[in-house]
Length: 155
Image (cartoon, rainbow, N blue to C red; front, side, top):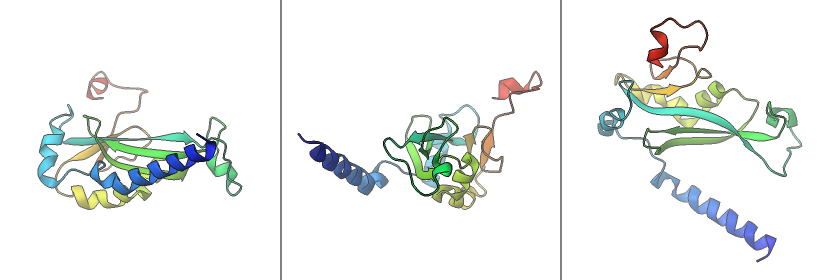
């Protein structure tokens, strides 16, 4: 098998996954939110969100090189994933330069823009780390410094 064959198979596989992603990356329907929430210990939590830089191997963008260079000094894009406690992906967003803050990636993702309307009036929310903004639909943990005796138990 040649390098070109492997490349073709890889690209074809990626296209098939992308074309069928709506079959396995799905947001829960309104009537499923209660069942999904029961999996989490903080009440009314339906999913967790986090972002990670993903290495762009053997590729360095000519335009905006600094934007794609992460704090670990390699070129990367951000992969943001939202999943339930059973590790079922409910949303995935990628392609933002690694220098972009997690909160900005979330706010500009398709789900980030729709979430206020989707969860309005339901009481349900996502959990995120300190990088994400606190809102009615996105909860985050306490800062790790200067906690009261009660606060560590809430995390």
